[in-house]
Length: 240
Image (cartoon, rainbow, N blue to C red):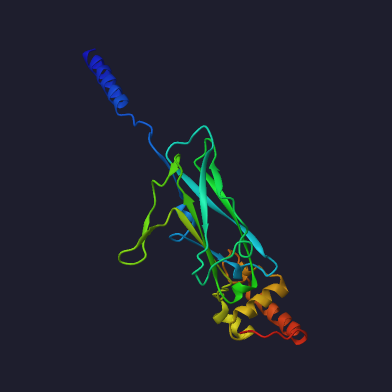
C-alpha cells in the first residue's frame, strides 16, 4: 500500500514539473522573408530555352514567409522593383515583365503568401540574358528579422532573403544522350538545331534534354532524325 501511495505521489510531482516547463508561445515582432527553398542564394533562373517557342509569358510565384505569430487580420507589406540602369542585363518594365503592384498582404491566419510575377519572352534573350530584382520593404508590422548574408567581396555583404533576382535566358543545354547516339543521327550539337526539332516535332523541350522521368527512346530519336532530314530538304535552316 505504501508503495502505491509513493508511486502516485511521484506521478503528481512529475506532472506538476511538466506544467512548469511548458514552452510559452512566441511573443514579439513579426518578420517576412522570401522562401529559401525557391532560389540559389537570391537568384531564380527562368530558362526560357526549355520552353517551346510559342510560349511567350509565364508566371513565377515568389513565396513570402512569416516569422512570428499569425494574426487574425491582414497585414500589409511593400515591395520595390529594381532594374539598375547601369546593368548591361537590365530588364524593362512592360517589355521583359509586367508591372507589379507595390503593396501586398500577409493574409489573416496565414504564415505565407505569394507575389505573382509575370515575365515575358523577347527576341533579345537570344543574344543576351535579362534580370531585375524584387526587394521586400519593411513596415511597422512586418520587419526584417531573418536573412542570410552573402559576401559580394571581402568587405561588402548583402541580405539575400529579402530580395529575389529574376534572371532570364534562352540557354538550351545539350541532352545527356547526344554524344551516345544523337551525334550519329543529327550531327554536331547546336541549340538552334534542337529548338527547331522540338518545334517541328512538337516535342517538349524538357523531355528532349532528358530532364523528365521518361526519356525518349533510341527508336523514336531515329524516327525524328529521318523525319527532320526530309523536312530540312524543303525548309533549309541555318544554325550556329
